Length: 138
Image 1: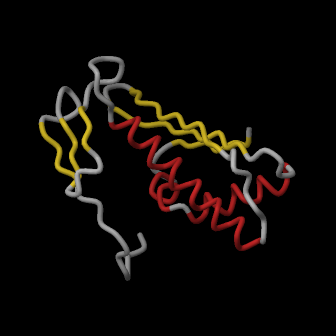
Image 2 (image 1 turned 90 degrees about the vertical axis):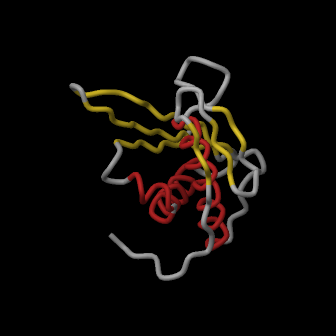
Image 3 (image 1 turned 90 degrees about the horizontal axis):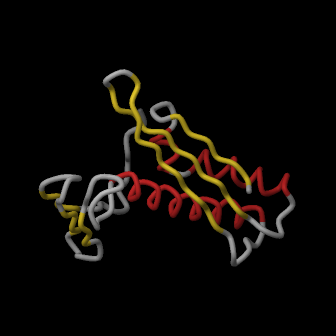
């Protein structure tokens, strides 16, 4: 495990009750969501939050990779993220997939950018070796 030598940002979120009817509120109140179990209630769930966080971070890593190569990313770039919550026996596990859309960029170049982004995105690093992941080009 690599230790952080310089912290650039710390997210602070207060959770009450948990995924079954609780709330998640950040210290700056920009995040203020109700939580519910997947498929129930009117709130979001941790899997949706992980999908949003990983895909947003991955898009940022793609932008950095493209900038370093002098490539302009299309305005309509997008990611469809899926996070699975499942079990093996009595144990819970996550699965994670990103489907990256980079219209107008040659497939080979788009795949190179995805590979660089996957190697540099902090969320990808955190998931790698811990969660079964798949990142594909749309």
